[in-house]
Image (cartoon, rainbow, N blue to C red; front, side):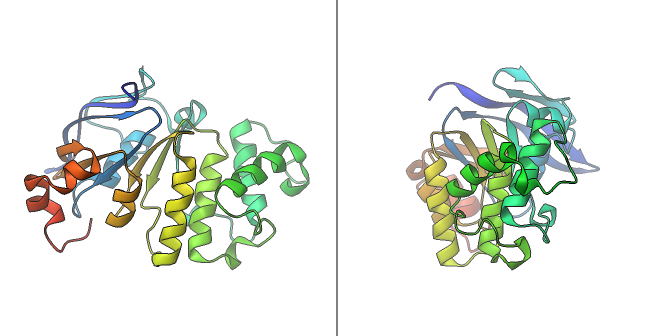
Length: 251
């Protein structure tokens, strides 16, 4: 797994006097699940924003499959295979799970089909939508209106919508947020099922999930990486334990 699907070189992002990303260099290998952990204010979400193009870095480069995408627009990054899980606020609450994913398929296809005709009637949209809903464990919830889905199911739907864009690299920003133990375990199983089919960069608070899923972990503190390694190496790293794992603070 030596090939880098995503490479970050000397990335810097400042907000006034605050350095949110501090000369960060790291890579994500093709086919791995690479987790990013760190205390509150470590710069995890700011990093994800830079990778998706929503936040412009002040210095450094982002390479996707060897291609410099540092200045590339958000929609172009999606078109070449970089996807971020949707936030729940972007789910259309009055649409069914199938309709939400079908619209994500439609948006990625770059044409409108017959937009005012219900998306659930278009086989070109519904067949791939059903496939990704099955991958995230929602095959029996396709006709349920999103507003009626549980919190955990809405998070599964977010991931289905991201998968509908056909990414090679998937960025997941706290997919277990707000979940109870049962939903979290279900999500771990879903992500394990995706492992190897695509590359996943995972930002997550739930340390049990991180250590169950990750091939490698990078620890951020004050916008910089203090360690990268296999889960056991990170768990036993004295510097990491002092800065993060050994205290009572959440990620």
